[in-house]
Image 1 (cartoon, rainbow, N blue to C red):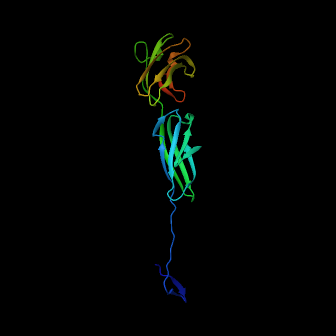
Image 2 (cartoon, helix red, strand yellow):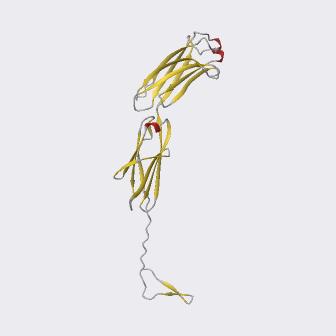
Length: 232
């Protein structure tokens, strides 16, 4: 029961008989978003499925958008579950952000975001040695001398995947004068795989100004695994 007063001649006067006043006061609840997938870590270079449950306790969902690194992707709806597919080309090595927004029938908007990390492989140990197993003295190398390269690589993914290992001998002008390569098949158990290569010093290079670089690549990610010689 609410007492109703009115102004009369500068004074508050009670309205006789009393009155009942009903106030309908409600607050619109925002949509609730739960991102179910992907997991915190995913395989780099593999397609990712984004799934989120979206509900509204006092209304309905009017509009939903799903983003991967700021790019919006088309989605499908099944009940309260919203799903979008992200192609493998977008899932590069490193950190990514999944964002889901929802607007209800009264205009209230909610946003949920999740950081994920895409991984592929890791280089563990690399060595570049001369024929005697020592660190090479580039100033004393001559044409025909052979350098040995040994490298260990492990997979960080849940699938079997090949990687290429290649090495080049370069001049101080970044001209490649010798090249060698091999491939390694990485397994999802994370076991370290070893690659061994040899590279011969060419006749047309000043070894005192030369360097050897070793690269590992899976076609999407390429890293310099080792560097020896000039500019080391």
